[in-house]
Length: 112
Length: 108
Image (cartoon, rainbow over all chains, first blue to last red; front, side, top):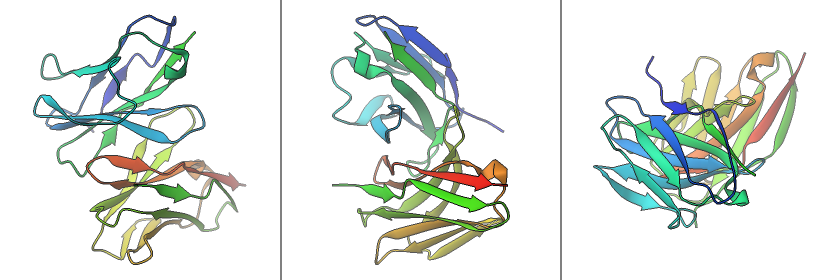
């Protein structure tokens, strides 16, 4: 069964460093998303991406965040200068329609 | 604004039925979802219901939707220890808005 895959499963980085979280969505999907879950809190929407551009972003998704679909198969989330409060589980999701979202296993980001 | 609320914890005995409840605010949501998250794992889509339906059954899972009260529930029949997880309801309004999750504990 096709699935969304995310790498790495766990990333530890120093405060101020840049990180890139990678995702391979399901191959025929058209809608792509990033969500995050800070430990013990709700899953929060970050950004949606369709037709090679951002379709919606939340207040969390400020200038330090960016997304890219560089080669038609990968979908990346870059955090330019990480802060301690960026520590969270980051989930990528994709859907063929904008009414569905299939999630990856997540990348646990720890900023030290 | 958009908001989804769930109770935080439910404990049942193996073999009993579990009912997890959820309320949401946005009446324009077209679909409502239930996701399951096991410890250290991602979000697994369990089931969903279209907003013009009242009920959907899928094997041991029954979803009930009361659109007037904006109330959604998930019933798990014959709950097993493998059902222990966090269950999230979510509404979609262009993006998914999640509840805070209900931890289901199944005692043998």
